[in-house]
Length: 133
Image (cartoon, rainbow, N blue to C red; front, side, top):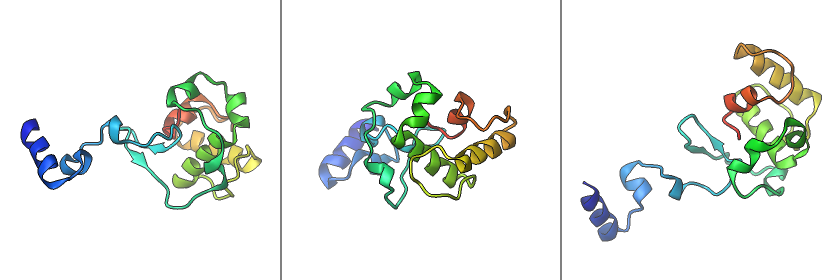
C-alpha cells in the first residue's frame, strides 16, 4: 500500500497529505499557535489579525512551561486566545492581543459551559479546552 502510494506521488506529482488524507506533522504549519482540533489538525483563519505578526516561540512545546501571567502579556498568545474564543462563540471583541475584561468574561463563560471553576483567568484547563499550548 505504502509503495503504491509513493509511486502515485512520483507519477502524478500529488502531495502525500492530499493523496491519502493523512496529515502528518511534516506537512503541518510551523506556527506553534495555529488553531488545532483534538486530533492536532490545523484550522487556519482566512483573515489576518495584527497579532499574527507578533513574535512567537519557535516550538509549541515552549508555551507549556510558561505561567499564565507571562502568557497574558504575550500579544501573540493573547491574539491566538482571542481567535480561539471567537471561533467557539465566546468572544466578540477585537483581536488586539490584550487581556481585557471582555476576554476575562469570555473565559468565564467558557469555564461555566465546560463545568470548570469560574475564575475568568487563563488556566491550564481553559488552554486545553481551546486546544492551545
